[in-house]
Image (cartoon, rainbow over the protein chains, first blue to last red):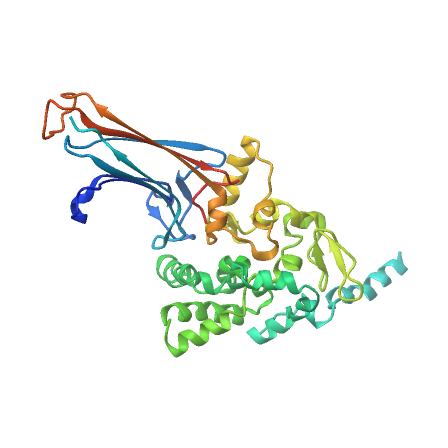
Length: 104
Length: 304
């Protein structure tokens, strides 16, 4: 499961330069064998380093971001992906907000 | 005493007779081919009365429990057994996968079980070829079917108390009278999380080996129940009958998770950052994004 937070400069036309901020938080399980090596196969996993989101818990993630002084219009995009396998991720929740900053 | 012994001798063979006809028998004899196995556990008769449940099941991952997991099982056989453990492929080894993915294979002969193991390797390794597709087609006949839960695994949670599954018996949560269709026996175990935990958790093979495809049951017991949770697996994953939705179903995933976002734009005081900005004496556009992710399920997320 991946939480992806992006801030984009809406006044920038070049897609590559648009991204002002991007951060991800990942929840996943790591299996390890008796020698402490990371393992993936069910027959190899003997313990788990548990980095998942625990039941009946709410986890708070906070992202602080600063932009350059000429940035005026920013779009914030927050997505929660669920990966059923390492390759296939689906957006479960998305929230987007546009903000206009006052320039001095 | 003599008459009791005589009665036992006379009645004992009945234990090995199918009680519900060919369609529902879990005979003690071992099948030598998938055809034989399919005949022993012919579930087509279930469909006659339980059409809705069968249709739901047909779309579930239980109905494709072997062919949807070919990669993992191939790796276990071709890498785990063959390369890492240098252990021959036997029925006992194959059952470490198939006791959950296709419980009927419990009633396969040693030769058939090994053959099925080889077919798993072929189906995955030669995917897209004639041989690979033929193997996959045959393997598609193996799954977690009606009798896997309603007979083979029904008593396994407390087999010491309940005894082994009776051939031909259909176990269900209510034990409703099925008239002449089949004998039915109530199995409250089937309504409990521990029933699902036989497979959706650590699996301990008869030789003591632990197979950890996922740890849902551990998380359920130690992190959910321990915190006061009281729902069972069935409460959430069987509320739509035999479809058993889980991680593959986005609506179910969405139901199990919550996301709340707070985006607070603000302007940072000039000169308070190490970061270089174009105008050092002007306010810096900034924001705090706070996200709350809630796990509403009865187990850790993600898990298998």
